[in-house]
Amino acid sequence: VHLTTLSVHRNSAINDLALHPSGERALTVGRDECLAVVNLVRGRRNCCLRLGKEASLVKFDASGDQFFMAVKEKVSVHQTEDARILFELECPKPVLCATPAKVCASSLCFSNYQVELWTYRTPSNQTIFF
Image (cartoon, rainbow, N blue to C red; front, side, top):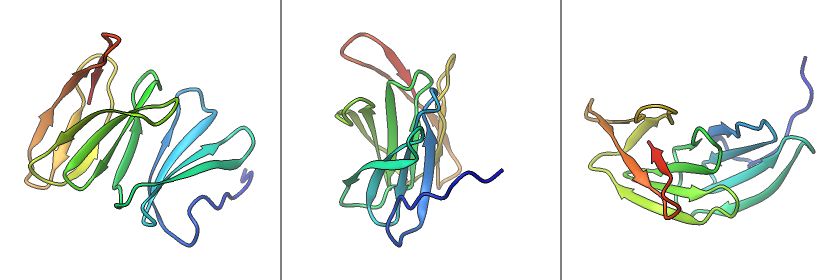
C-alpha cells in the first residue's frame, strides 16, 4: 500500500537512503550535494544540510546513535543527534559500498576490488565498527 510521496531533494536524484533503527527518521544524500533529515512520523523533511560535495552513501550504525557517509575517498562518522563530525577517514580509493555491523567489523568496498575493515572508538569509549 502506497502511503505518500515525499519531495526530499529538490529536482535531484537520491543516491542513498538510511533508515534509523527506531523507524522514526531517515537520512538521504542526493546529487544536489545535500544531506536531508526526514521525519517519517510526520512525513516531511526536517532539514537539508549542504555538504559542498556529492555523497555516495549514508548509513546508520547498529544503535542509531551515529551515522556515516562517504564522499568519494572520504568517510565521515557523525553524531546522529546534531550531525557533528566524530571522525574522518581518508581511503585510498572511492568507497562504493559500506555496511554497519553489530558483532564484527563491517566492510568498506573500494573500486580496486579490496575489502577493508575499520573500527573507531568514540570519546565516550563506545566502539563503532564500519
